[in-house]
Amino acid sequence: MPDTDDSQRSGGISGALARLTGSLIALLRTRLELATVEFDEERERTKEMLLLAVCAALLGMFALLFASLFVIAYFWDSNRLAAVGAVTVFYVVLAMAVCARMKQRLRDKPTPFAATLSELEQDAASLRRKP
Image (spheres, rainbow, N blue to C red):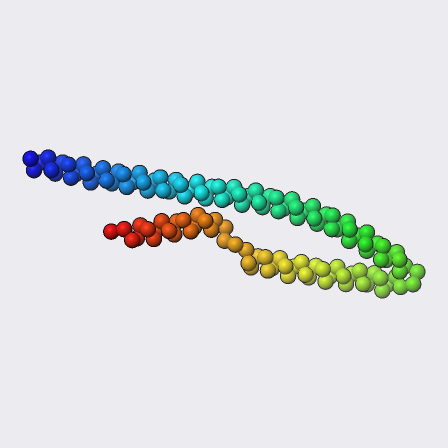
């Protein structure tokens, strides 16, 4: 009879280890799926933002080009150099403002895969608490 208890305990321990391993693999798979979904969302968001940025830049450049030509043509007879200088200063100030905004956005950007990292931290904390 003692041999039966030992075999049940051994089977019980190996069964428990097998279940634990299966649970850990399922947990890792779930986290990997979450990371994959977040990566896909980030990639699509980046593509959309890039397309919108290119469109906005092109349309903005056309608008600024024609506005600049209008200002220079309007003042051509009276103050052509002042008009060209004012348009140039306007573009320099605008470029500086855009660069400052880009620096701010880069500094304040959110952490990529925040949800995945948060879940992994919660999993690690949960595993540390278990005896």
